[in-house]
Image (spheres, rainbow, N blue to C red):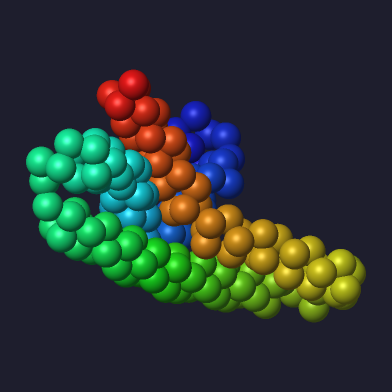
Length: 160
């Protein structure tokens, strides 16, 4: 319940469940943001290679090619971390929600349990929990894509 006496919204309740796993949240979100930031800065390396290495021949290709390879490896590692910890977060929260839902149903007396439509309860629970799992798995990448958009826009403005 909120201070005004109304029911707490689904986003706040879901946030409370996710913050039980702060490490997973921070690793998934941080690696997503880091990987997207590196991806957004790669065009700056391309600019140096085209303008200074190939065009003016004022810089050596080796370090810049190494920077490209390093960026690719870093993005790969960050993507792996995001997918692993984002998946763990989604599954852990889904498990907690299933456990709490079972405990709530088990607290009902026999008469109230008999009034429930079992198929409808199970079907609704399964579909809702799968949607929540998908949301939690994809949310770090979505937030990272917003960062990628912002940085890419800044890089394009700077390059032009």
